[in-house]
Image 1: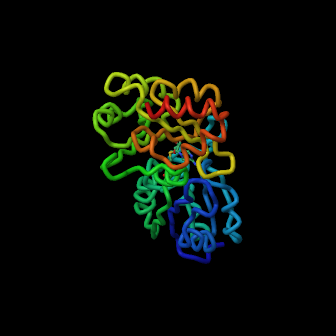
Image 2 (image 1 turned 90 degrees about the horizontal axis):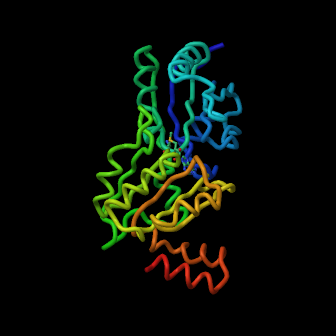
Image 3 (image 1 turned 135 degrees about the vertical axis):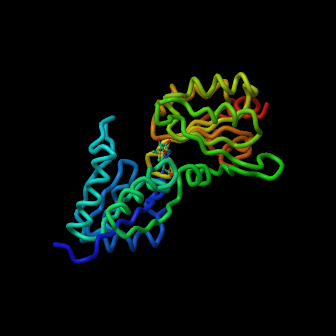
Length: 264
Ligand SMILES: C[S@@+](CC[C@H](N)C(=O)[O-])C[C@H]1O[C@@H](n2cnc3c(N)ncnc32)[C@H](O)[C@@H]1O
């Protein structure tokens, strides 16, 4: 039975660590009648939605539980039937999250709409790993690019960005890694630093830090896969945690070698 008026709140859940969600997001979950959540959302956050029906609408083992059209219809029908629908999405809902499409659809059916931003993985994952996307005298800007466009291609922006000194953050790019590396080999140097971080900010996080020439092998060795972000640029070299990471992973002799190799 509906107690609240039909409303959609699109909420960013942050990159994975449950503590990286906003107070406003928690309040929205507490007042939800229905929560529709995606695969990248940390399910521990659902504890805040005590009174809500919880529905998983994401993608698991490569299969979509619902198509985007079905999700849009579900938002409207659930809001009309029960009241407040919270659409909980990983990271920030407006960064490769289709949040704006869902808002637009809901408004066509006269739902009240609201948006609660979240910490995008594009920003939160590098920062929590000590990688500063901008740095004085090193990187004056950063690009956040999709590795997989709606027609399943690598965005052309990767080639454009690789010609600049900007830091480049690529989401959904793991299955295009070889293509990305070859673009950088053509446009830049082999020793440009690269970090790949899977499940960033979660306790299952894994990462590899190398260079354009070494990263492919490291990804294979460490069996890194999606969801992961790829960070390319000189700022990776300056990450304070880089030294600590190398120290942890290698003996002292190898550490000196690796460090020289990377710092060139
Ligand atoms: C459909 S996009 C959604 C991005 C999300 N809206 C955001 O702002 O983070 C999914 C991609 O985001 C990246 N991603 C999301 N969460 C991540 C995490 N915790 N660690 C690494 N990459 C993540 C991966 O590249 C993943 O394939």
